[in-house]
Amino acid sequence: MEQNRFQQFGGTQNVSYTAKEPSLSVHAYAARTFAWMFIGLLVTFGIAAALAYTGFMERLLSGNRGLSVVVTLIPLIAMIVISMVLGLRLQKMRVATARILFLVYSAVMGITIAFYLVYFDVRSVAIALGITAVFFGSLAALSYFMKWELRSIGPVLFAGLIALLILTIVNIFLRMPMLQTIICYVGVGIFLGYTAYDTAKIRDIYYTYANNDSAMLEKASIFAAFQLYLDFLNLFLYILRLVGSRSSD
Image (cartoon, rainbow, N blue to C red; front, top):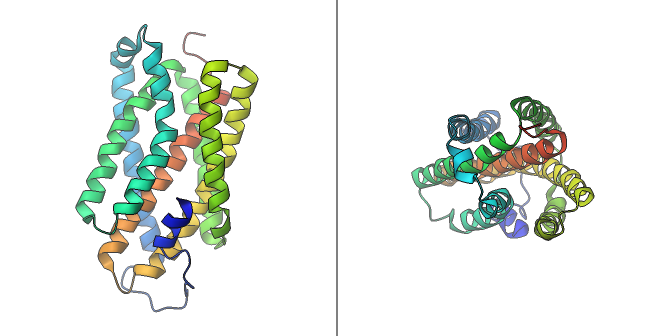
């Protein structure tokens, strides 16, 4: 999937960084992409806070362990499925449709995050969010401004993502605390890698479409924002599991 997705955005092309830039600069394009990511996160955390701190999510999950298991698996499964669907359909999709799908998905993910806001105390959530912001921001900035070449790590990251999903499902039945800790550390490593990888692709996307397909450039920006959004969200969840304390503690 990663190879096909990256190939669609110029992953196998010899991208020239000396091409004449259009009116929208690469820096402005990157800023717009991160702005959409931030909007998605605001929607997600806004809905999550409303569900969690009004007591609605706690009542929904009360006595329903099966639902809580499904909720915890949503981020990993969604990253794989939605990325594949968007990657395959993006060429034919309208810009407005891509934006709406991203915002709708961000709203739905608010349900998943609400579960964690109920399970962990507010202080833990704030600490995890701060650590995530520092890690994510540092890796994204280094990848973008240092112009890292990271195309080759895409298949490795995707293989790690599949292994992570399998381990997570296995541990639902084994319930081994040590394995859960290992899963969290591996998850943090994988999504730090994805943060750098997806940020590095922004330049390739821009120089592939900026001078010949403005509509595709806009859609690719939403797709990139979606991937970065998932990187941030999954990174946050794994860090929260490592540093978080239960709200009942």
